[in-house]
Length: 304
Image 1: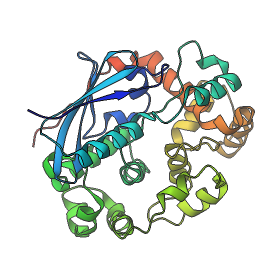
Image 2 (image 1 turned 30 degrees about the horizontal axis):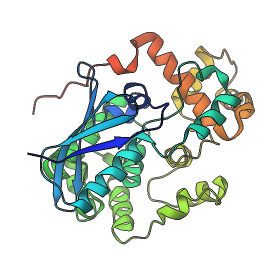
Image 3 (image 1 turned 60 degrees about the vertical axis):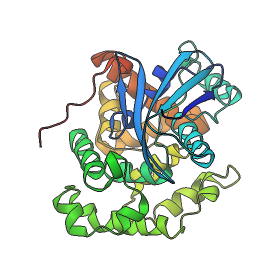
Image 4 (image 1 turned 135 degrees about the horizontal axis):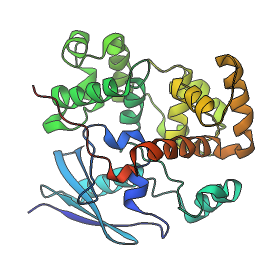
């Protein structure tokens, strides 16, 4: 019988709403089940990979069920990864500060934006979402898990660091990203990424942004997106979807550089919460066409 954990959550937390708030909840190994309202994923912990299912049987507490027994050390590691995915460190006061500056989201309680259990996974997912369609991003992440991950988990930095570029390009189909991903993985494997510094609220966002631009495979969009994944919401991550949103939802007109400039000015009113306001607008637009995200069916797995 596998280990089971109870994880306390802030009073405002809602599993379905807060998991299904960003596209990464649809990237392997994560999978949301709209029928059972549970999140299934795979963590690669100290003693190996384990599949877990996270449910919310009652407000204020999550239940995590694992497919094997875990040591106390592994349980603590799993707790930390679950808390990171769900941004459980963001307090009710944090959420209230956002709702004060943008009260549109207070009635529905939206504020938390789903992310990965580790920063490494977040950065790889960001790199694999640049210059490609969403189905391509899904495919790359699925192949990374299938080819390199232990029992379908997301590959660890050490495993990816040992991978040949030809394997990444041929079997995982990451294209030009192959050597960049390997270089990034080696930096993580050698503990060259100072995660506490990146997450330190005393360090200005501009310094973190400038540093992120030095990482392999990370450009302006990627650095801005990684900022919000670090809990720094003061910058917009501008891509083609941002411009589409500006044109179709906000009604901005002109050439793309003009639209982007007007867009930045439009969201300046939300200050340190700029990305959150933008993203929830964009996500609400998606849901207006596809229905609530917690009802979306998982992406079909192609036949091998």
